[in-house]
Length: 316
Ligand code: ADP
Ligand code: MG
Image 1 (cartoon, rainbow, N blue to C red):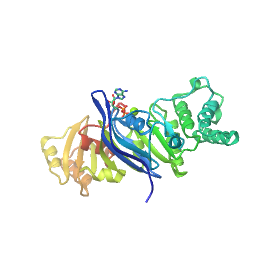
Image 2 (cartoon, protein in one colour; image 1 turned 120 degrees about the horizontal axis):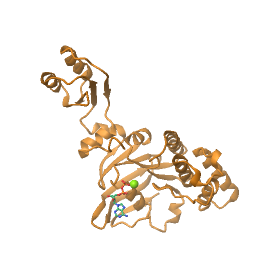
Image 3 (cartoon, rainbow, N blue to C red; image 1 turned 45 degrees about the vertical axis):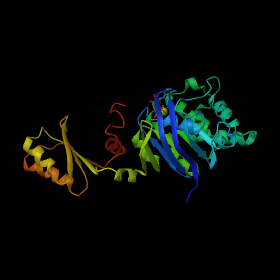
């Protein structure tokens, strides 16, 4: 049984009248890439700030590496790498000197520090930019610098708060691959995001948050088993008649249908051959069938079924 790295018990955080965290409990084990998934405002950053004792909370306890976390727990803090949502680097220092500065807060031996800084630079792929000042970096490169500053001292626990927001696809892939590599090298990771695809891709266990509550928790397979949706079928067809719509909604395992933007969507719960049956009905009525796809449930479906709303807006 792996050791518990972080234990949050019944955490309550209020901002005046707003309850930002409502009796939140989490347990994160050594070796996990633990995902905190939730829409903007669900309490992810507040959770991170409370767990690091950067923010005072109203109730509850936080333990890291088996010890109570307090604002002065420097021995715990040196084993943690923090990558905040808002990039925090010094504009007047170069890429190299920024990483060196943050690494120097933990590692005093010059030679060891040089090795760590160089490894971190390689790790995030900033070799060609070491002499650049942050203002000259693109958003993606700046994020990568922010990450290098947080991981250069080789922490055992790495916490990243939405590290891929507003980042180009190349940097985003580099960041996600980097996190997986750090985990392979032994780090436990806490990763917050409102992008369900990323969380699905890299997290071994996930807590879904909404309005300061943990609404579900598990591996992605476990989360998907909690909901009734097993398959969503989409067919591009001209508007179906009432008869066709009725026949499809009466097929076995179909629990919801919708026609919108020239597409029929059919939600199924269990069973086999759902796609064949849907297409069978359309063929019986000689309908012209365009593109067809069948999708397995996503974490968005999990969020939708549990909370009744989409995890994020389409345009986000
Ligand atoms: P997330 O990181 O998931 O987007 P946050 O933890 O930032 O969510 O915010 C949770 C809730 O607390 C939101 O409703 C937000 O508006 C509120 N909140 C966050 N920080 C403050 C603050 N300093 N003062 C008042 N309300 C805040
Ligand atoms: Mg946040």
